[in-house]
Image (cartoon, rainbow, N blue to C red; front, top):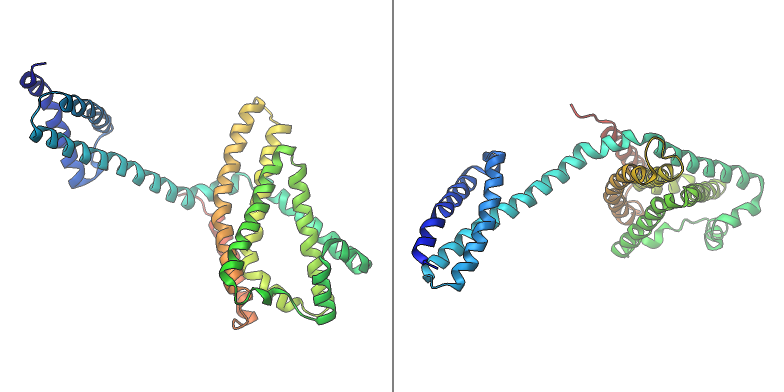
Amino acid sequence: MNIQRWIARREQNWQRLDALLKQIEKKGLKSLKSAEIRELASLYRSLAADLARARTQEVSNTLIHSLQSLISRAYTQIYQGSRRQEWLALVEFYRWGLPAVVQQTFAYIMAATALFLLGATVAWWYAWQDPTFMSLIVPEHLITKVRDEHKLWMGSIVGIEPLASSGIMINNLSVSFAAVAGGITAGVYTTYLMIFNGLLIGAVGTLVGQNHLAYPFWAFVFPHGSIELPAIFFAGGAGFLLAKAILFPGKYRRIDALKFYGSQAVQLVFGIVPMLVIAGIIEGFFSPNPSVPSPFKYLVGTGLFMLLVMYCSQKRS
């Protein structure tokens, strides 16, 4: 290979790549037109081949170092720009995409909410009518603590907040993911989880109400529950979306319905995870804190729920 002729033939491409990189470094990737971005990617690939060839031929170290420097600059701008675009897409999703998918799937989320409320209502009714019903739902040690000692159990979190918070997050995430995955059982397991969790909160709520501990109990629940329960309802809605694709694909082929509704379910999951992380932090550090007045906990819980409703209700202008 004639080295000088090869360099003369390739040098124009190297200079063009250098000019594009200087423009990006001064004005950013957005300053390039779409055709120039495609040209940048093509020049980067050809430069990588040129560098490999230069290393195997009798080319001066100066030229090799120059090409290495050029390819490093190109790599930084191309892949840093790609990461930047990914971050921008993520911000865009949480700003507008998640509220949009919540609105699109609202009927499924409300179906999960209704099943939860049905379970809570049934538990409340039967727990008042039949005292033995309580023991079928609520662990015996909690019943004993509330009825016999007239105490709530949340104080056990105080002093081990980091450990408790991480445990709460893991538990809530496992319940939510189970509710989503329950969609592949045609929604049967998702339905069970929604009703069972409703039964549990209804029975516990009745237990503390019967023993005059409702006010401090709901003061504990309100701050994190304002985010945690909607996240679980979102998970139930995601599960029912998968069930819809399996049972009632409509005009779609079943595989296409799974792709469509599965995409919406995944977007809901992306919303559920940060919600449960925030709820776990609140439940571990704020909700059981005895130094925080109960009225303030009610206020915080109400405020968080209102912010969540406003966030999910917003429409892109």
